[in-house]
Image 1 (tube, rainbow, N blue to C red):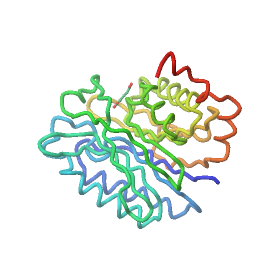
Image 2: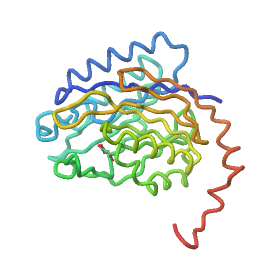
Image 3: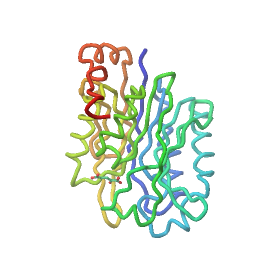
Length: 262
Ligand SMILES: O=C(O)CCC(=O)C(=O)O
């Protein structure tokens, strides 16, 4: 079976959750002209951007508003949603948290970024998560990661050892390192023999510009679709039947030397 994915590559307004929600709502309307979409993916911290010093004021208390919003959109459009991530506030702490909803509007996963990115001060303002991110999309084992997470192959491997076949990535990846973004994502797809569906934002904030180039990559490392650096809805078809064949042809999961490493 094939899965049809759509990536919402958008700009994010710095520190303005209401404006960003409105923008996503607008962008989602593009789905109406598409025949079949199973899952929609959004970028990292789409509610606040990297306005970290004001999180006390602008982060979503318990993530409730973001959850209500994503749940409504998934029901309205009849799609699963990997809802990017949002700044969430809970008991005086803030996290960079991703929600996954099914097409009936039910929350099926909450994952908080486990690797905080010091270069953008995340460690000063955010609490790291400590949980894995497994879920299913239409019965296919999947996992989700947030931006800097993709520099940790062992974290993504942990999820594919546990069965994931689709690796979703949500990001605010800066333009100067967009070559790293592409190379890391292609490598993660090849080494894990998994689809990679990666959403980056575009635009800029007071400190960084963000490079777009959202990507949909096959488990063989082929690029199924790639965005440029403009706002767009990037779509692609994942032929899930190829995963088993690739994993049989080069059986890396069986050939791992677990006597030498985990
Ligand atoms: O690793 C990088 O170069 C970018 C990571 C990043 O921007 C983030 O995690 O927010």
